[in-house]
Length: 101
Image (tube, rainbow, N blue to C red):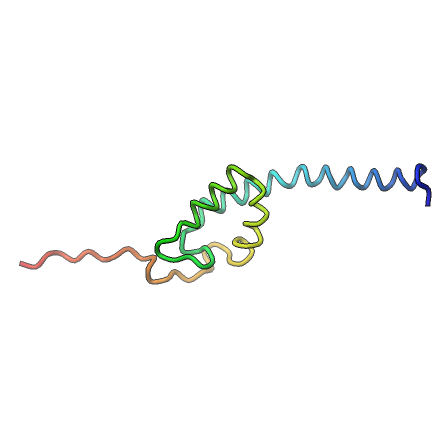
């Protein structure tokens, strides 16, 4: 194994290619997860309740810090796709009954 010969050049080239791919992929992941966190209904987040604000929290974290997009992907997006979670009873709007005379 050469330290400063062709072996080192291959390692440096592979490292550069990986870094370029990450530099291109991470902003795309960030935008994708930000859009998903905004579009996803509150009741579709794992462990959500009627009074939770998971949607707002994730959207703000992803928008301002950007690195939570990777966490969001594994903790929310990969666990349940939008539209595949059954809506709980608390997520329905209460039915207004007309006053009786």
